[in-house]
Length: 381
Image (cartoon, rainbow, N blue to C red; front, side, top):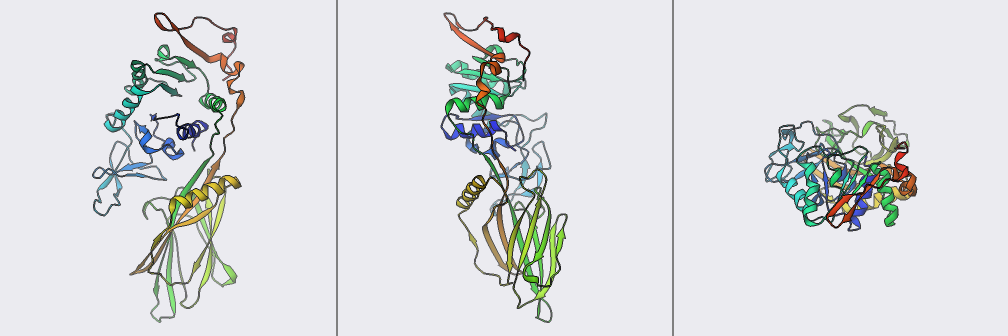
């Protein structure tokens, strides 16, 4: 899950203060937190991202891609005109940094007014030298890290402290709220049916699958409990492992409602949620895709207002006549995290211990030698 700092950066970007983010992490949390892709350079790749080497389309997954080193994965580009085999984006030790990401990072460092180096040792080249490019254009460098870094002498402001605590104080100072993080995942329910030989019954197969492909994992679902409303006499079932699949035979003329209880993994914000699925075995020829952005925005708003997860909605419905199949795509809120700001983060006895400023002199910028008594205190971080 994104940290307080991740979400603070999202709000700073929305406020027009933060212009670009450069990340050496491969956890994909900046992208998942809400930083626009065009304002993000992931120098070492993203464990949850696949890319098409042919048309350049990127696919953000809800599971960790199985390979590293820019190798081919088991999936293909979904563009019917392309269909090329996808590749992972995580660099191995011998791989060069991606030129597209690196060029953007260099460009934004050169024109930056301030470069914030947050929670990085600044030891991995060539990324560690990117902040220095801002100095040539009159920009400044701020380093926030618990330990010393090789670039400390170049910093205009140096804070040895916890990044979350420092950024929380910054948000208080700017009077900006840290937005909550709402995670929304997707899955599809696939219902396939066929008449029995006597034409009286329907043999149907229900499957819950990933939207990233029927063979892709559903990492947020632990198990699914299925029951039927109004005492239909149908036997309940518990689907405990993937593929989550149920096969049954029912009377053709009979329609009923099925209750699906989704049990989530422990790291989700709630243990389970229920979805009622009506079954009438009349496959519509109509396929429709709803206003996905509007639906997701409504789900986020409701989750924040209720401070809980489990809300869900249909975002897409497709049908095929041969074989008779209906595919319904659901969006579901699996986590809501609120972040508390700490105004005491900027108090002198908290941060004064680790703050060093560089002062302007006639000969340029130099580090102040004046030390406060607070420097002799034992660090509290």
